[in-house]
Image 1: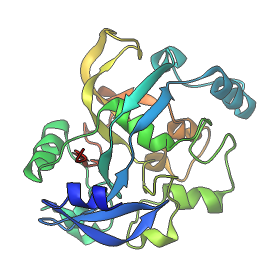
Image 2: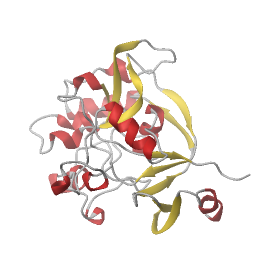
Image 3: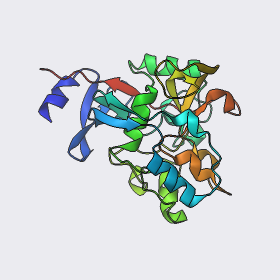
Image 4: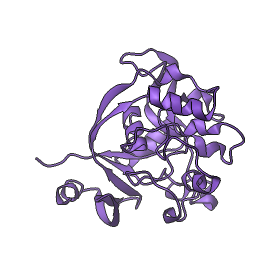
Length: 248
């Protein structure tokens, strides 16, 4: 724990409260809270087990399975990840009256805002890693769609009081909102895969459609990915990431 705190002593200061013995920090300049996420390895992509779980929920899957394959083992370095998406009150947004809700950016504005704080957008590999948070199920909350009361705690986009919401096993909230990743969208997850249409990758999205009318649960699938060209107005949320360089 002390090693982690010492490594982040510049732009970040420790906060009280943690998840699974890992510390939280506040970004000194903005006050935005961050969670330390340990590095590790995981299987990225839509596994056969997840496909079977999805078909148990709906025999017809309204998603492109090939876009989420092949399943490959990936390695992720330790990160600081913002506890929630960037909120309107943390920006100069005209929507400050809805300050506790996520701010929406186009890709360039998201990149610029992150850079102004000395942070960056997550890589797609990193995003799926900290969304899964060590789980191997269809969703971070299991293979089944829970009751609406439980779902609401995952999908509510009002972050006025995060203690009333559900977090994943890394202590992160609101990952069901559509969020930018660094890379342009590729046709699949293979190394060197061709670009789809030149737009960028967006992960998450189940909260955008809440309350659901049909099978919108597919947007909460851990491996679900989509191109930014599918966004209605070209805007998505921003999850800030900062690299952690532990002292040897």
